[in-house]
Length: 82
Image (tube, rainbow, N blue to C red; front, top):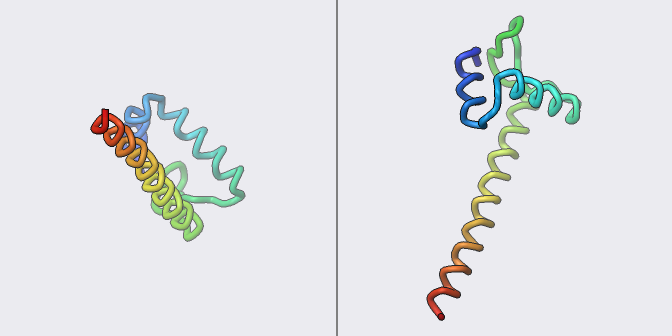
């Protein structure tokens, strides 16, 4: 990951690049694992632990989307029965 990609991620999250970097560092400290392979300040890949974290994060996002869909389906059902 380079600075341009990190800035793009920050824009998508409506925050700043230093904010994304800080949150990433805090997550690594909380998990006690390094998620990224670094060469100096440049991210060049993911560690095996990082890959596992990424997998579970993707799964959590899918679960959240499914929960939202249940709510939307329920709302549509209620509106349809009114």
